[in-house]
Length: 455
Image 1 (cartoon, rainbow, N blue to C red):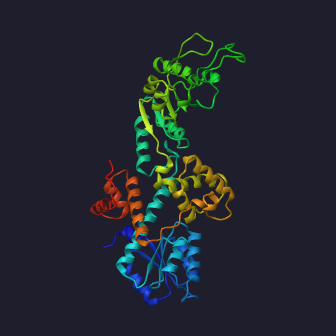
Image 2: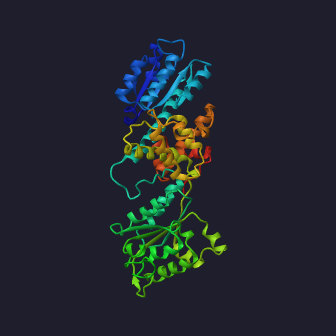
Image 3: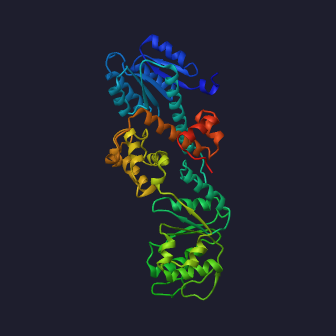
């Protein structure tokens, strides 16, 4: 028996054959079925009910023997609601037009004659994918500011990073964030501050690679009047300004050796001496460091003090690069699009299918920062309602689409299972519920696709 939750789901069937309409209505009695016979009525139902899945025949009047009207209807449906999953139904053996439809953005295709059970399974999986994507959107749009605001984590690696941040934040442990440039180290440092009991005090950041060596000591520890040429007044350093709060030392691996000794003394004694001064000033500060350098190699090369390394890495958090977060790229891109489209007062309907493929295919050497810059530029340059791969400047990165139906379905199942497990933080029962399947079925899928049990 169908659940009440399923009965609430709308399924739009675009079909002009009365006999097939009746068959499909009976096949999908566990959905609230909407029937449309042509493009105009289909678009009207789409606007009125916003169904998550559309089952559409390609042969529609006034061209029931051809596909021109069906393809045009498909394009208008996706232009109105890009998130809708459209499954096109084609004549027996008409694979060429089925592939054309998928190339235009259809989620899947099915060839007549209709097998009720197989078609029902295809629609069910399409709705599961739609629901997962909608849940991600709800999480991205939720009201209020989270301490981890701006950090998108739907994959296991980033979820583990977020869990570590939540555990470490309430402590005073000196934390080292390791990750490539552009992975969001400062964002995580701010999250550590926001989740700590120091949240109402200052968060002070300094980039150790951006300040000349002869000025960095003064920036960190301050100076007395007359300490050097140009020191016309007493000035507090970043460490003092962060008193009772959090000090973030970005690119600490680039700190000169001479200053590393003074930083080590501060971390051990929790006192500072301003340049040109003799007074020891006690400071209560939580220290978070970050670098894109391999500090162990720097130690071996004599460019970083081993004792300082152990002092700043009481807790070490490794941030994965974007190329290792394949399942999260499009989710992250959509979040950034929502954020920056609003700031530019643009009303955009997401990414085109070719843009999403390009986002998945690109290696993103500049990580999240590169993705954000691409999206900012695309919002300004696009002339349509959807961001395309050309708008992103990634046209050459878009791969030829894999249109092998078995492989497409396999990839969709693997992606859906992984995303559900990530969204449920590894809880198998919750994951199965998100997917609309039983726990044994989920275990079977994990075994079939060699998806490991979450730790």
